[in-house]
Image (tube, rainbow, N blue to C red; front, side):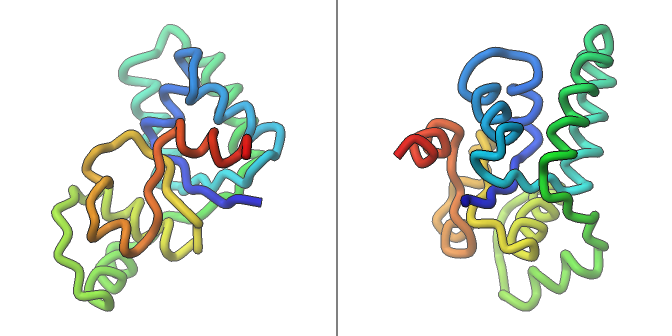
Length: 144
């Protein structure tokens, strides 16, 4: 069974729009793969819901809670753990702090891939560390 860390943009898209991302979330709920949800992504997702989708927050929170219940939860990494990850691999990657936390969490959690639409992750130096896939690729893997 695949173990994929879901990025915030995938979860938000899946909660609020029909399409590939919502299909991917449904497959996680059906336990067709193991979604890894980090505490960082969970907090970020809740912040986006509160800021941009407050009128639909109750419904979104219900689905989000179901997703979290079926997922493998991973704790928030400390700044020291993230720095240790970067320094131990001598990384020179141009990512913002949040993306570095997600990358370090996925690697530490031994995820097979990060599912994201964030183009900042789609760089050769990141793919050397962990596979980065988009939703369509994840769905294709699950259907094959």
